[in-house]
Length: 299
Image 1 (cartoon, rainbow, N blue to C red):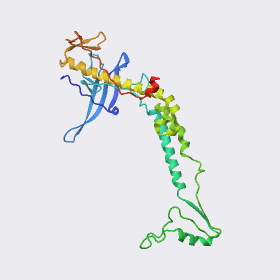
Image 2 (image 1 turned 90 degrees about the vertical axis):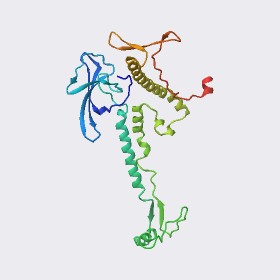
Image 3 (image 1 turned 120 degrees about the vertical axis):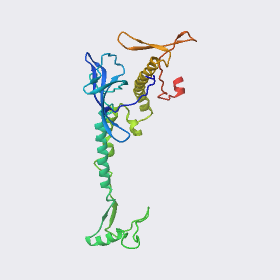
Image 4 (image 1 turned 60 degrees about the horizontal axis):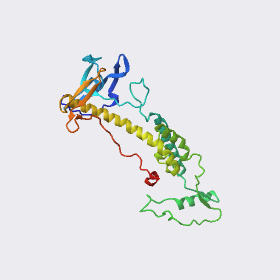
């Protein structure tokens, strides 16, 4: 009513249903929302509100619908990504990567468990007879907790092991382990493919080179530009609605003209310097995605 628009987000799980035009399933009219309202004294009440879509032009909406109070003062702008055309709600773009990301996470956890198991024994000591085991245990055992302090400290780094004939001390080798951390690379690639980004974006710099980076440069740039275009349209729609509301209450000089299909069209007042109506176009500009090599571009 004051011509001021305050933009807020609604959690998707609060929207119970999207009611569309009975004659056009792709034209949303109402968003049935259930949420808990907490008062100052801590009491909670369940609110059931039907928010009107910001582009809805229906003039015969009821006051209540299925127990929801229709609210035209707080319209909803639905940003939908993913999914098919007949779906009312969108699908997160990271959804196809979730299963592969979980599988890769489980693989790395299992690999870390095996690595810890391999690390439990650092050396293998071979003795000439079983009678030498107590002496070896006493030599290698710690004395912490048995007295004032450690009286049998471990050797320093770079020490020399001297043994009698028949005694052999060798490190436990795990280089030939059956499971390697790199064996899960295919699961990582599946998660990267679902997100549409190259493997180098996920921390593996060894998989890329200068030639690979240049070959992957263009597809990644186009994907980022597509995302910028998407959000630019969202900002243009929201800011265009702000301008429209400001014109309706007279905060901006101009008029709102309803098209034959009910879509509002905003015309601002004439600019005295140019003697033409002011432009209502909102331009959204993003910083450059890439910093190309200037000499190469000039060449």
